[in-house]
Amino acid sequence: MSRHLMFRFEAPLLSFGGPTIDNYGVTRDFPAASMLTGLIANALGWRRQARAAHQKLQDRLVFASRLDHEAVRPAFRLRDVQNARLHQKDQGWTTAGVPQGRASSPSYQGVDDETPTLGRYTMQRRYRDYHAAASVMVALRLVPAEDAPTLSDIAAAVDRPARPLFLGRKACLPSEPILPPEPARWVEADTAWDALCRYPAKSATLRAQWPAAEGPAGDREIALCDARNWLSGLHGGARRVVEGRITCVGENTDE
Image 1 (cartoon, rainbow, N blue to C red):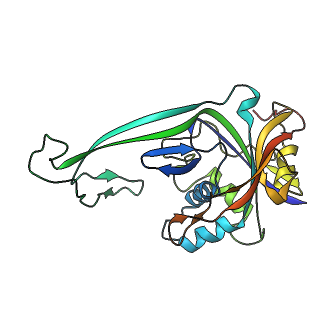
Image 2: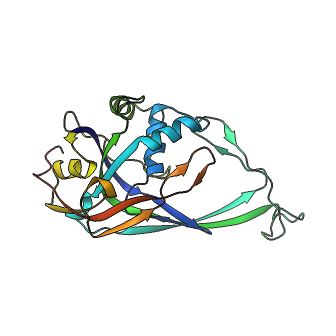
Image 3: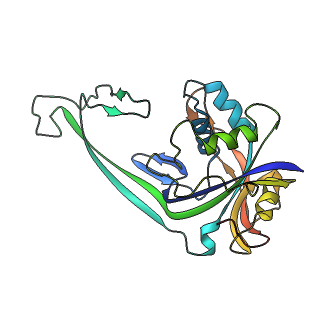
């Protein structure tokens, strides 16, 4: 059997980003490989420039996830409409504590500062989807398990992260500890699918997603593009995952 670390994602709003088309940012039902990589790297205090370390970590992830909130309430999404008037020299603060600017845009033209089409600013509108009041469990292991960072390193970092952690987007702050208490956060199982089944839940059956080689056939198998090429900064490639319902054992008593 292999050791799996259990993550619990609960927040008033959370987002598992999918493909962005124009100014529409959708969210998938289940966490992405790139999102988990970024979350763990943030907890460890890595910077974006550590591209090779990010890539190696993502390549080692084996995980499955299930939607625990569906045991007590139906899932629903909220669409946020964001409008911003951005001036040419606007700067924003970052978690590094220094302001970050933006390059000039071709739309910054003319001299009239009151007309969006001619002034020195542009009006930006975008739409972002979120899961409202969601609760998602993730069973994760690393292959190979002995390389650094180990699962124990990751658990220690998530308990005391180097930087604030968020679930998908920076506005999605967790409402509960991301890791269950000891020793419930650890599950010994042959596969990530089996680890999810072994972890107690409030419902006997829940909707879940797992790697195609990690469990039964399920309801459908898809090619999912949820990995980031950290060297180029783009998403690409696909992995085979299965979506279906899993049967859990026992009732969750860690709350």
